[in-house]
Image (cartoon, rainbow, N blue to C red):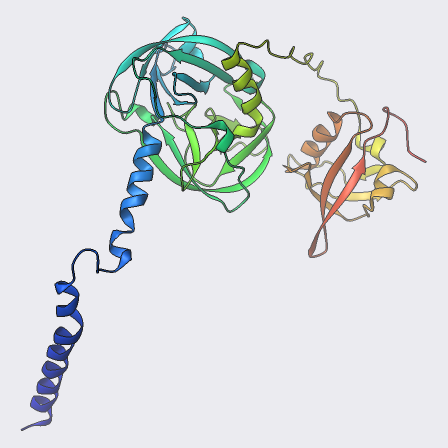
Length: 361
């Protein structure tokens, strides 16, 4: 027998042995005896279905001037309270809401909060118990958290079809700085920036969840970042909305909105004792050229040549954006600052002056 023939014969013997001792016994197992990994997909699919049942499609005003007549929302009570983004869809006071199973209802606008870009609707369903997100079981996300975005983007569903589900990762929690067309966004509070294309036409008002279905936030509008001139994929943390949602559902009066900012900053960088490098280009990095002796910045431990990268979890994208962030701080507050010093990130605490033009001594 040649060497080649002997090698082929040995390979066949080994293959037969593998079949006899490994594959055949596995096929003979009952479903209960088979490895758990085979069945592990079922709970994930069931969890996805449970979450999809809590997301709704919304149809209302639109179709003119480039405004879509469709959007997204999600149920937050078994009696039919729906959370969505404040938009042109609710201009008539009533919208059409389609559930995951295709049932269609007329929903009435209860109340909203424009400063949070939030609206709450109410549908009347014969069901005693509609599936919903329990706000008490919502989750806080951190950078790196894997998330799922549920929405009716591009009007993919009009009846009992499931809405779109997009997988993403939380990049950072920061403050929103954007505009829609020529207008700035009404909401400028904390947001989760998502590393995925989630904010498409019709997606606003959708749900952002953890992989196990806990509510993390509400998908925001299509917005252009006013600092980088790039589109922003973001969600408003549900912790920023929960109190207002619960007040609306309970029929309680909402707190009076804060007075509109007159547009003049409260503070300049020098009020903190910061001398920044000259703002010579549109996005000059926020490097510190000098620190005034005895100032709040000196006491906080900020040094010359530090690069300021975060203020209160808000990403500082330029010298100009740092001035804007510092300018809107409240007198006497303690703010958290992260600086890059050489190759290290250093968290510091900076006290806001009591008033503009006053250096701490």
